[in-house]
Length: 173
Image 1: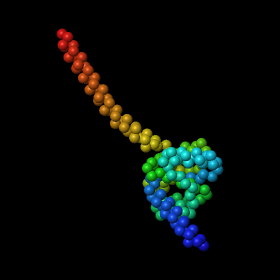
Image 2: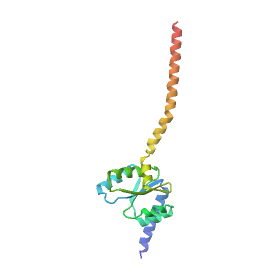
Image 3: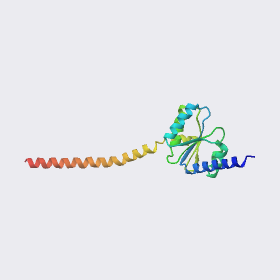
Image 4: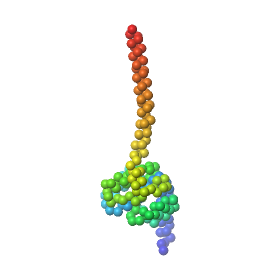
């Protein structure tokens, strides 16, 4: 039987994981077995740059936390080495970084994921990874909004110049 101190420590980890899963907009669970230290360091750097929290987690503790927040469907993938990547502000970031990294490093295996409290399959994780980042989507949206305004401004400018040229020609006569 584990000591009271060990038990309290595990309860704290479960509480922290539960809070992390609750606050995450999205997350991906992966098997990192076979990655070298250099590859793992590179992966962690890319995830950190994308604002994604990445940790290796114990399956039993993760199972308790997942069940607590309604992600019990993750039970089936919580075996073997497990890493958890979560993001509180970008739905596509964990999927995008891990899927891109897995393309280059076949040892990284995507197990499953979740978005807004719903468990998603590996194929759905790959679909999320193909979505442009939030910044790209915002810039496309702004470009779409700006295009008609720019066209209107050019049209009004052309009309104003045409009227100015017409008045100048009338003054010359």
